[in-house]
Length: 286
Image 1 (spheres, rainbow, N blue to C red):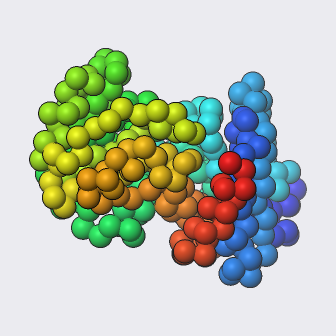
Image 2 (image 1 turned 180 degrees about the vertical axis):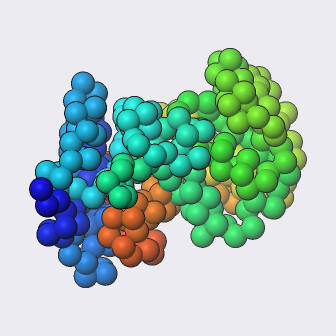
């Protein structure tokens, strides 16, 4: 049977549960329009009990999709269900991007790529630091820690309320990671060049502890992968003491680019126009 994907314009998706508030269709729709490409990108609600069947269908000729994004809570399962997984996603144990290649379903994780690309774009030379402090040891921190390690940061300290979870990540990624409890956070900030919040502290208006960012290096940087609100409590605290900041919205935008290139054959650019479009959507739903 002829594969239907050979006769129609490329279609991609984002699948998760819930999926209602995903901004991926806005991002990819903007790029499709900007580059005048014939294609489509849509969101699909897929419950955990239906994921295996959904993935299996993608590999058949009846599927209209050439690939797509996988979001919570399916990233780990998608990594197991793909035919080929790139080394970074395999180490993370989670995939967020799928595409078909020679009849096989391939998987990668672009979260770490998005994280560093955002910092590269908004704060060049951010990686010229000796010590990074990462708050949080949940699923969101894995890609950040992997990216920092791969950039060659010589000292990476993982701080978490439950030190055992931080230690699990040290075992996963090895040197130069070190695990700490929350009581070590203030001391670790002394002379640190980079602070990254990967926890949910400060998300959606929740409170965050006050941290002594003034103890960081004078050219230090504070960033937060949370982007709602855009200026999180940690970013506000850092700005008040004169420390440079980068918000988390760019990570969302940059992590989308590799998938778009796989599905639609064009490497997209993250522009201020796209950023403002997504910002307007965030503000419209706040």
